[in-house]
Amino acid sequence: MKIATFNINGIKARHAALCDWLDEAEPDVALLQEIKSVDETFPRELFEDRGYNVETHGQKGFNGVAILSKLPLEDVTRGLPGDDEDVQARWIEATVVGDHDAVRLCGLYLPNGNPCPGPKYDYKLAWMARMEARAKELLASEMPVVMAGDYNIIPQDEDAARPEAWQDDALARPESRAAFRRILNLGFTEAFRARVQTPEQYSFWDYQAGAWQRNDGIRIDHLLLSAQAADLLQDCQIDKEIRGREKPSDHVPVWIDLAA
Image (tube, rainbow, N blue to C red; front, side):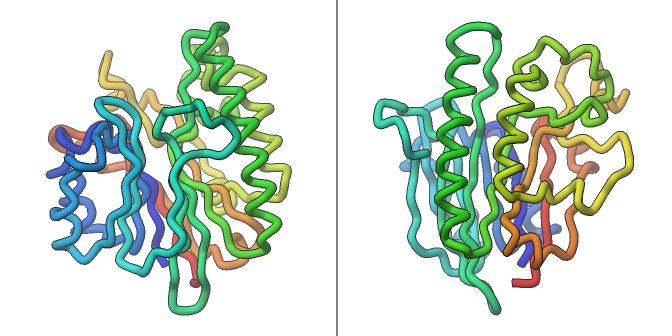
């Protein structure tokens, strides 16, 4: 079961690039972030024609997450529990049924949090506390769980080409990293670092100042696996070359292969 996460930075602007990648990479499941579209205007037929079941949790002009799956999806839910007043579309869950196992998938777009300090950073940390609470509930199910998406977290200095440039940013502040570690320490495995330890591995390059050409990137797109999912992990890679194509997202896909 090949599961990918991809912040596409706007479905209307990137649908052609996304379809090209889907045709080449052939993921069984793609978890999308920043679709920047309401559910009604999401171009679902592009993906249904390719054999994908489509589930969206959209928002006009901002945020928005989606699941594309060639495998059956069950028990789809939208929104991160814990705050009934939070209207931002950043979380979608579903159970995907594979040949050997059913896997609970969470597609997420974690708040950026800048500028910090300030209300946006407070929202980020509060959102992560809600995510930690939900993660505990998911672990209690004792089924394979994958929480994947744009975390807007640089876990460690080696996950940035220039860590000194990010030390006061919401993506790398100590409080952000500590909140991320608290979730990991519940019993999750960060899939990419479980498979790849080499430096200069990034999933985002800014559009400005030639960041892609200089490989001035950061790694902020992650897949966290419960112990049951980690036992099924066969591979995890970043499709870096996608960033160099025409009209790319500033993120690239990260994917895992599970024996499910």
